[in-house]
Length: 379
Image: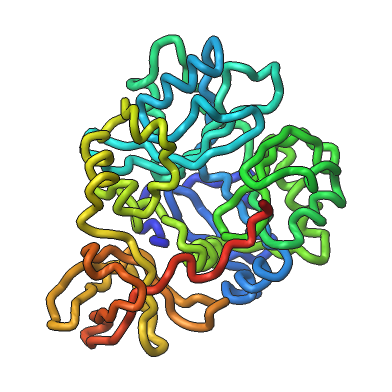
């Protein structure tokens, strides 16, 4: 996770005053003023999310509608820009996918939801990364069929409640979420507030992402935080949780040079899309599916206690540079340093010995199975 260092004035989310009142340490991130941690500290926030529930502000993410005459029309138009399966998406279901460029690199990764309400037939709801939403919106404007329109959503906040207590917490203010499956989506009232809720998140834990009208965001957040199982969490804990879960961060682990196959995201491309193609970069992606990629994203366990941050060089046993760390830090659940990075495929087997150049010193490391911490999603 990299903080902004430019002099450009930062945007704020609808929860900005709440963050400050709770003692959040605010930093610049993706153009927004965001809490990196609260007084309890990152490790406490991380562990609390693993054991109970953490509340995260993700309102900096881009929310938008795609609208057309029918689901088939909107889905087929969107599939021209990404390799994910959208046409077969059932009402009330959410899917993870990526926008790709003509070279097969990843422009952004995103969530696509088909609303469950029949009144929303012909709509898709997208959530994209804050740092890429301007790029994504321009891509959609230029790449979609003229019959499909993009409508950015500017009047809603986005809150993530993550952890094993999340279902119980939301059920204290609503009902019906116990029947929601992983990657499903519904519209419902929480504490009397009209929300869009999906059973998803980027922590590796069970949890929910809640889109709420901006004017009601603080009220909802405060009511969720009033539950004894919930504490406010910042970007630091979000980053350590997703790293232990082996989840990619755009700009670190994936970018416009990285293909979904190299990144270990082949699971997000359905059989139909692999065979039929029809998306940007299909030549490279289909070739890598058939023949294998030359490099792979892997989990890495550094020896000792020193964390290996992004940009750290990876060397093989003879001392030749073979890759670099893309995400790294301390894993509170594991009690030691964890990292991810890219290495040649021949060095990607679990247990392979590597070395890391940390602060001018050569430190031993080994390739580890991802995720570092088994997911706790509700299946």
